[in-house]
Structures are given as structure tokens and as C-alpha cells.
Image (cartoon, rainbow, N blue to C red; front, side, top):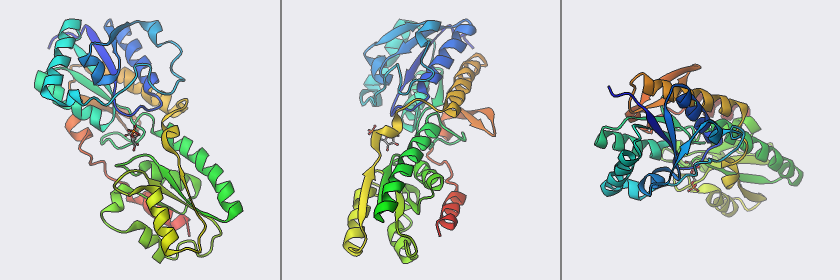
Length: 326
Ligand code: F6P
């Protein structure tokens, strides 16, 4: 097994609070163990266009508290083609980079898996996404901060909803995964959550109405995951207005505010532990794994398991929400 002398770090896909803390941790842990570090700008896009900077310890000073990513991010269409990946590989060879640390979500780690297989290139992934949709880890970097952002916003909406006795459909992120919606709903005492995991199984809004939704309440909050699978908050509100014109319905779309802001303590610590663990993993000869955390212990999760989109949805959450919103 060849010794790794120079690593490249990149962030890819939707940004997430705590990505900077992860970049800092990987950089510092790598330097501590004698490696050189290169920061790759704009994710896989920067690998193709050779936008690469040398990082030292002070390149990552003062960023642990910042949202976003100093490396910028992108969703690269070109990297999805064999030709794009060949150019990316040529860049790595030219820059003398022996291994990559990829910080991102499902799409980014799917790209990493493919590239690692095609070129037999060592990659370790860090789960950086507000969606919490990767398997093999209890939490992803950015999820806790986004959940707290949702909680603060929904608390404010509750004030006006109850003053005006209105029904609010509040749209949150996670177009393919309902963790933000369901836990956001539990944390704010909302009435219900409409999530992609249930969308194919049943008519979630219809069920809510038939269960006597809102009978004894003067205002209600329903969190809806954005995107085509649920149809989003606007569609829910339209249907409600048509079928129940007596309700005073409003929509609030939280949008990209959920991806920004200073990371919570929990995300900073998670990112720092995972970043240091990524360097340990490379030094131990681990290849093509995502760093996860389970029961407070660092674990190595093969990419194929992490990205299967099979993170089991915790049904207890839905039951808890249902019971507490009577
Ligand atoms: O996957 C991350 C995520 O923020 C999802 O939660 C959200 O549904 C989507 O990305 C939004 O994508 P975009 O950045 O293209 O608006």
C-alpha cells in the first residue's frame, strides 16, 4: 500500500453548515500527520478545470464558525461523464495528489464511488448535507444547524398563525428525505409533516383531513418537504383552499435560509471529529469509505452502503408526532 503524501479536499453538492469545520479538521489533521494538503475549488468542477490551491494550517484559520464552504461548491454535470472523470484524474496526477477527501451528500459520494472504482483512486468521504439521508451514520454534518434554523423560523410563524387563527403549510428542504420535516415538526409542536417517504404509500393530506385535522384548534402548522415527490407546500395549500374554503390558509417557504448560518456546536464537533477521522482512515489504509458516527463512535461505511438511499426511516418519529398533536 503506497504512503499518502498529498491529499486533496473538496466540497460538493448542496452546501451545509459545518463544511468549513470539516475542511479545517481534515487540513490540520493531515498536516499533523505529515501530509501536504491541496484545496480543490468548486467540487468536481474545480478538479476538471484545475482550480487548486496549496493549503497550510493558517488557510483554515477562523472558519470553524462560518457557514457555507470556503472551497465553494457545485454540482458538476461534466464529472458525470467518463470524459470528465478522465480530465479530473489527469489533474490529480499532474498535481501529485495521492488521495481525496470528498465532503458532500448522496450525489457527491456516488460520484466518488464511481471515480474510485474507475481509477483505483483512494477516496474517503464525509457526510456533508443538511438532509441526514446517508446510511451508516446517525447524523450528517449540517443537519442539526438546519433543524435549529427551521425551529426558530417555525416558532415565529406560530405566533402569527395563532393570532390570526390560520392554517400554515411551511415548506422545508430535503426533497428526497423527510428528516428535516418530521423532526422540525416534533421540535415545534406542529400538527403534521408531509414527507417523501410516505408520498407513494398514501394521500397524506387526505388522511390528515379525514382524521379530524384541526377540529379543536384555532391554528395549525403543517411542515411539508419541498420537491416533486410531495408536490410542495403550494400544492397542499391550493388543494386545501379548494376542498375547505372555510380555512384561512397561508404558505411559508423557508428556502435556502436553511442551508446558511453559523454551525451549531453539535455540527462543529461532528465535523471536527469526522475530519480528523478521515485522515486516520487514510493512514490506516481505508479506501472508498464514508466516515460515519454511530452511538458516538466513529465508523467506516463503504460508499455502496452509505449512498444506497436506504437509510431506514424511523417510524417512531411519525408516531410520536401523531400522538403529541392530538
Ligand atoms: O440536498 C441538499 C438540498 O439542500 C435539499 O435539502 C434540497 O431539497 C435541495 O438541496 C435544494 O437544491 P438547490 O441547492 O439546487 O436549490
